[in-house]
Image 1 (cartoon, helix red, strand yellow):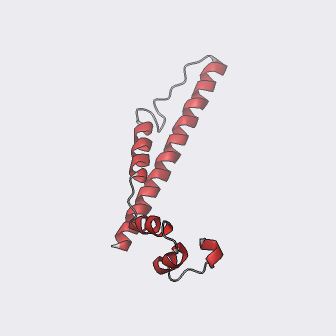
Image 2 (cartoon, rainbow, N blue to C red):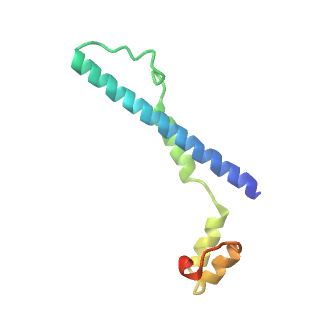
Length: 106
């Protein structure tokens, strides 16, 4: 179960990274094209660009939504633990192999 959750989180994060990169590329290309058109007073043909006719904004928005809706079971445990009086001991139970000292967790 934990491996499936880890894989889902990894894939979601990678989709977000790729969508953000594509969006940045599309925005940069659009800005550069705009400058060329203004500077040279010519029509710049963007029909052959990789971003022509592709709704990059929608892909990025979908990836952000998927990322924001990730459910990580351990986060529920951590939230409950942090509200207790002895949160350091409880965090050590959740993460028994951690090398952090008490001061790092407090």
